Length: 274
Ligand code: SAM
Image 1: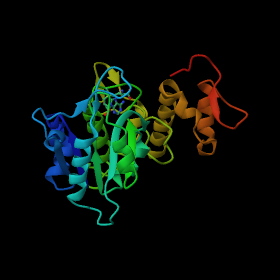
Image 2 (image 1 turned 30 degrees about the vertical axis):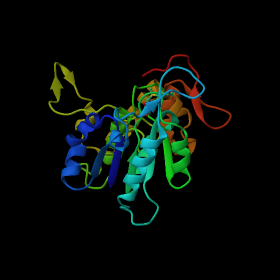
Image 3 (image 1 turned 60 degrees about the vertical axis):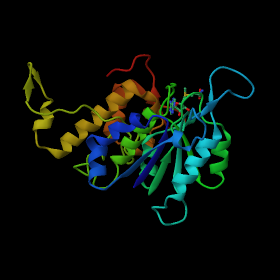
């Protein structure tokens, strides 16, 4: 997979040289190219921003350097060879939420171009212009506002890269993750433990030593339900009732959840037990 990142702070992307993404680059699984937006400016001060039309505080990123940068990056190749060009990922707090599902979709693409902005964002015409010719995804990593899009790019790249074949040591590692697509998609992952079996007088749950795969799987599912009910009841509320077995339903009742007229489950008590 090829990733191009255009930014005014190339050094902000240096973490992409370490750990999982760094290793994937070294192994040739990921081709990451970071570009300095200012190389596409033509004035003495390498200006990338200007005052907003209509007034108001802050500055807006000028369309010209972005246009030249994107033209140059896009002209430099098409890894998919299908003529579709890259998917252009525009980090913005006013985009649609970046979720595990988005990461799975992006991981299936051969080429992504990221446009992390600063100031009040990029002149809108850039998204309009490239949206007519390419697939543009405006994505937010959460309901808060950061000073720039570089940290969101690090977040998205790591989430995408770990899904690529041959990047994680154990290909099964992300199968049971929170939000992983599949039967447990609406559940958070429960607690995990490793050796030693007793630490500071604290045992690990006995079932994990039983070697009984069925009981362990059941325990893990119960823990996932408990955790989701406590921290993300919104996820559990949209859980497909058809995916719930008799044990799940019993546990939900224990946690104070009941079936609603629409067939979905929801909490009946004010405080949900862990
Ligand atoms: N005025 C903009 C707004 O309220 O939507 C905020 C601009 S923010 C200060 C500057 C840049 O940081 C954004 O253009 C985007 O690239 C990035 N950014 C900030 N918060 C983000 C978030 N939650 N998700 C994705 N990108 C974000």
